[in-house]
Image (cartoon, rainbow, N blue to C red; front, top):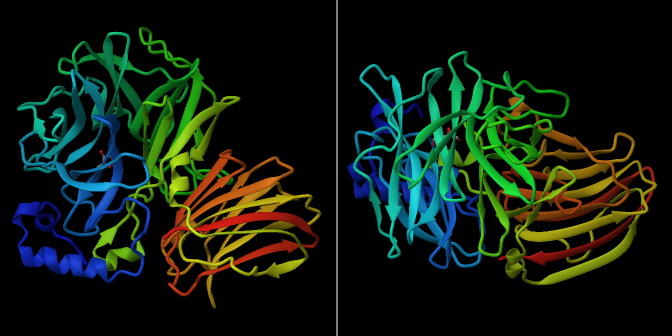
Length: 490
Ligand code: FRU
């Protein structure tokens, strides 16, 4: 279906009840609705926004177009949770109905201040000639959950030297001051991040560009996020316009980080290592982090990418968020592990210890549509070994280790309904290791695979048939010792 401008920018309150009912009906007929991921009731979800802890609960908002699986008029939708596992749909938090956000309440972040939760976001607007003009805005949530927008933007102009691609403020506090990083594009059409400061979250001063070593690194950096872990500074962002380089940058757009000593806020100098992708899978973009009361840095991402059609589109909805991951630093590398609370999802358990001989095996009790699986492979003399997930007559999703090339490989060539094939159906990354541990979360239409306790992660949507519930372990040209545990998740 081709959507007209009127349809894309239709407000939810302009849609009739019947239209919404029909859309919901289609969504509910979809065989690929997730079980334990945040997903929209209808329409399209994209970036996580405003990830925070306030009044005893985690709050996680997301970009939402309610009326179909397209990037139309964006709202902020609000979900909350006490445990990062069970999420309650609260409802719309920000409606894009004002002159400063008329074409979308775009991405942003949240920070508690004076007992309230401040939501800072980009108001996207277009004039009659369809020229974009972004405003940075504030909405304030009180302890009862009521959200009130400020009547005017807090940053109305784009600094000289930058284009209208100026969005996605991420705020934090350092000492008595507030800071925000905002994604931007220089006038020469290269991407970068701008720094602002404020004494009170309302009056913002342009400090300047963050001086990284990346002057020509894509044409736009979306969704920046700066935070510190011990003495390290970390800047996450989603650059657009990188070209594929060996196994890297295979998706349409990327998401990754640069790490170094803490950012010098005065000079805005950031010395850092090279850019590293956060996730090696097919569907991961625009992540955002928060610091929780336990002192953990937790990340959630969008399990999807812009400008790609997904098989759920035909059912009137698209995308979900990733599971929350805890981020730590080891030797200048971000390590990502699923938050420990996710153990609450564990149902019936089955375990096995065995030697996998050349070939493939199914093991009694190892099957399912939704589950958590930990498989440790040791003492391999096999050339390659791994797991086939969601196996059916003609379907399988393969995760494996190739010893000769020292690569982890995710293959979704036969995962089910094909999509985005022009970006390839195999993802790889290098990993030097003797033991290989795959920690896998399989939902109805996704896999998240944490490798060796978070050294790498592969996140991907897959669209298999419901009956494709097999699990097979395999080894090629040799043996491997396997220790596996699986918990059903229902
Ligand atoms: C990233 C992004 C952001 C923007 C939002 C709009 O996916 O393009 O830059 O704020 O999505 O929905």
